[in-house]
Each structure stands twice: as structure tokens, then as C-alpha cells.
Length: 259
Image (cartoon, rainbow, N blue to C red; front, side, top):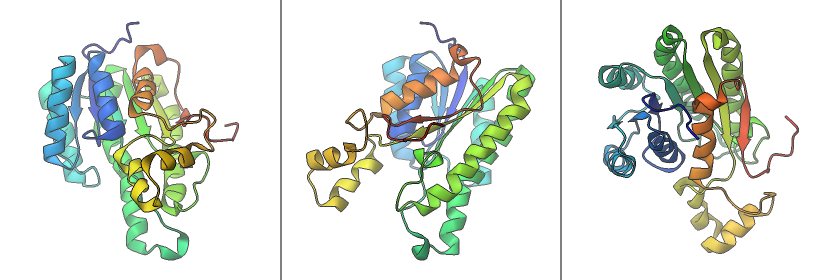
């Protein structure tokens, strides 16, 4: 199936590992030109080199911390300089740290706001004018299943991420007339380095940890970054031309709510 992504320019954030890397590779495999960013330059370059070799796509690695406005400006300027603009934004970033209410100070609340809400705002602000001018664009924000169902022990994520989903929903109505589609994608348990860091903290071996984490997942297993990326690639494509304003969980059925 031709997804209509050949020649499109995709900007993928937090793309050196895990979900972001899988999204970058999935888009590159469909013929998109990809600008990847992450804070760690060495890991980012390695990931970009590997994706370029696997897919034959044009791939640029641009180090950036998306919580810094100057980095966001440089990142989008690089995309414009190299490829003429951004057609697809995958606004992804690591999540806020664990913690319950009594453990969290003002600085941690501010950092969570900067990471999960203000960073997407700045990225969207930078790429949206070009999308509107072309009358074609895809804005996809990677958030968390906490948008749909609070997760115990993740007070910061539960508080801030639904605000980001509200931003995307509201924006979808504002820019729909310009053929810019805006969606939120909400991963559940996905086999990333961050997820697997819980093995050591749990005191279990890897197999037992995965079994315990899968108990409440109807599919009975943890998802892969590639499975998540498949959904993002579809939403970025021409085939998703009538899908906007959605907050879609990719969680193996773990969220129990109807909406």
C-alpha cells in the first residue's frame, strides 16, 4: 500500500532510541525525508546512520533539547535549510519522573510543564505556518495512556499530559480548514529502555517482570516500538486524511474507558 509519504519531510523528536527511533525509521521506510533530534549527539548520529543504511532515505541528525526554545528554533531552521520545511511533526519526548503529590516540588512541576506541554507548543508554533501555507500537514504528539486513565505513582504525567491532549484537540479544530491534521497518540507499556529500567527496580528477573507488567493488558504482552510506530506512520500518511482531533491509545487494550 502506498501511504503517500514519499518526499514528505518528517521531524521526529527524541529519535535516538525507543519510540522516537522506531517512528523515524518507519517514516523513512515509506520514503519520507527525516530530520531526527535528541539530546545525546552520539546516540542520535548512530541511529540516523543505521536508519539511512536500512532505508536509503535522506536522514539528518540534529542534536536538540526540545525544552529549550533556541534549540527548537535551530532544529526547525535546519529542516527548512535542508528540505524546505516540515510536513510531519512527531512531537515526542521523555516523560516526567515518577512521584506522588507529597514528593514533588515546584521545580519538578515546572520541568514537567516544560517537557510535556510547552515543548510541543514551541514545536507546533515553529512548523505550523509552513503547513498552513502548503495546505498539508500532520502534527502528531506522543503523550501517554495517562491522558485516558491516570497511572498510579505518575502524578506529574497524569496532571500535565491531559493538558497537552486538550491543546491538540483544540488546535485540530482551528487548523482543519488548512488540511492540517492534529492527533495525540498515547502509548501504554512499550518495550523501550525506559520501560525495561523497571526490571532492576522491581527485584525481578526480566521474564517475571514482563509477566507482571502484562497481567492487566488484554493482549497479554508488552508492545514493541515498531507496533507503536506503525500507528504514527499511518496517522502521518495520506491514508489517514479524515482523522483529526483524536487521542488514540496504543496499549494492547489496557485502558478500560470507552473514550
